[in-house]
Image (cartoon, rainbow, N blue to C red; front, top):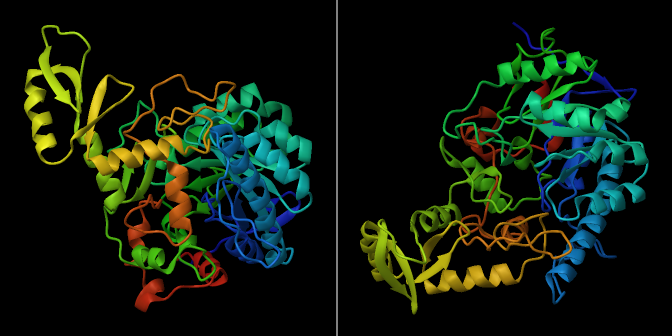
Length: 464
């Protein structure tokens, strides 16, 4: 059976039903999104702490000079606005008027709405739509209406979209460009896995997408495309979804495959790492300071976080029937269970002689060097999230979440910025979808072949 892929009509233009997935902190840039749009699809520029250029075309480093978190937060917003504007303009020039350019926003980014306003005001006529997830972006439709762009909410269930629609989207129905269904088990980056879902048992996306379509039909949205995101490698494996009357119009989002192109801004070391991955080399975990699950490549960075979280025991401030043993660490005394006392003492003998409190009446054990690093990273917080469990920052009047900072997490801005700018692949967070191991198995990438964006899109269109 031959494979065929038809264009889809959006906002008066025929485009390929292929969207480049947005990847934040200087990864989804104009260098890759422009050619993707130029090939006839929808390219995506990340609006999350994006790289701006100086008058000579050099990347401006993200150096924070503010003395307070609030001052650094304002610098982060400025970096994001200036960088996204530069990247959108670059993408627009490279696209040659073909396809569309979207921008992608993590709704839980601190100052997300201010950043979007700042970008959309300066890029009128260049941006087709705003894709937004990691949270419940109720204000997204209102913002899209103000600037005359389309909006693409990212959801992981029909229930979530229904809530967004009833509260806000029904008032701006004409600008709903599409609804992104992001598989909470297989997508890279932050995922919308709920507390009721088992992270070790992936669900079949078909019934979940069908449920979303049924809800959309009941709301008069049968014509609006659903974008399948997460777990999409080639379209031959999804041929039963294409032109499927039960599902209605379907598009596909590719987040992982565009990492490995000539235009992709990631380092050569990162690209080589992608080519060497094996099944199981991507871990779905909940260490992120956002509170969301996320998927990233297993490496020393994640291994240290796993170990840090395993070296954990509960404590109390007063003795009771269960907690009746005293543990002294670094001149502080904790009341712990008798059976945990031996474990803690063993960790201390191994060199993990610092105990750090968590918000959940527990302590974790780290060595002195890691303790100092955690404390410094918490102090250097730039307020990149609306709420950060690692530093206890919140984008509110008090600039505090009101909870104890959680040393079981990490500074996500620091690590993502570092890996995006030639930093270590082993000692940073490296997001990837769970299909990333297929680079090593797909004959398209044989002998280390790295395609251009155009070659990749042409390959995808054939079904492979």
